[in-house]
Length: 96
Image 1 (cartoon, rainbow, N blue to C red):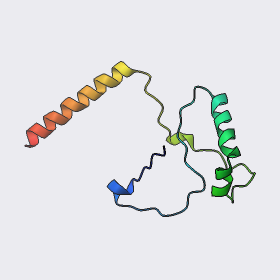
Image 2 (image 1 turned 180 degrees about the horizontal axis):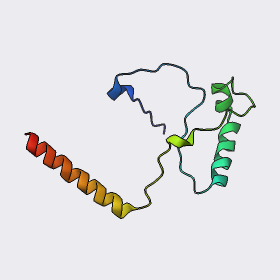
Image 3 (image 1 turned 120 degrees about the horizontal axis):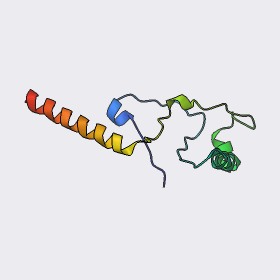
């Protein structure tokens, strides 16, 4: 089942430009599994039909600087979330 994400619902900004390729999200245990999944996607017929300008060449490297790494300290994350919750509640109560 395809999950459609439309940020224009809350930003009000619409982008009707055609994507250069389909967006595929996934988590992989290692680089070999990622490369195998990417190869399988490139072999699909719909990928070539949706991206005639990509052809056989490499579409380029992804900008992985924007990817948020998973939290390696879940206990610390719970503390931060609780602190932010308490700060937000205190600010809301003092403003009311």
